[in-house]
Length: 233
Image (cartoon, rainbow, N blue to C red):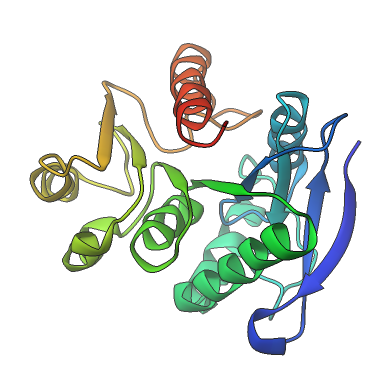
């Protein structure tokens, strides 16, 4: 089982709460698991545990720690969904990149992990893209990332492999936004795009009403292969 701890924030900016799951043996690679707008809930912790079983050190940062530390929400509960939307409105994704930088530094300098990847979901999927354009993350994967179409002017800075999972019926990322992503990123040799026909936002959640088992298994298998290729030595 993993543990909750804290790590130093970017340039000493507070202490970031994180959930850490460790493999049985010392790992040379790590996965940063960036949650949706529902906090480091049971589903995110399960994702960390799954990565640890595959030999990775897995770390999930509490992205809302500045104003709602420790929050855990269930997207299947309408009131909690609305609470999550409120946190999303307060959130500054630029702070999220700082937190990712802090986790990368902690993994490389204090945990002796050479290769660091990142997988994010929803808002975390947006941060996966931002990590690819703004940090030296070794590889990143975004599931149904929101607002990426509004940041495509940063795509020239993608230096390391990026994979995006795009459900075609995503009610938060419409057809025009999806087309913009394909048009801008499709030709980029560093980027791999996968469409999931007929699936909606949240299809790869570990549990709950949004999960589509076939789609989740397909996307997660592709993600595992991607990290095995780009992170394992």
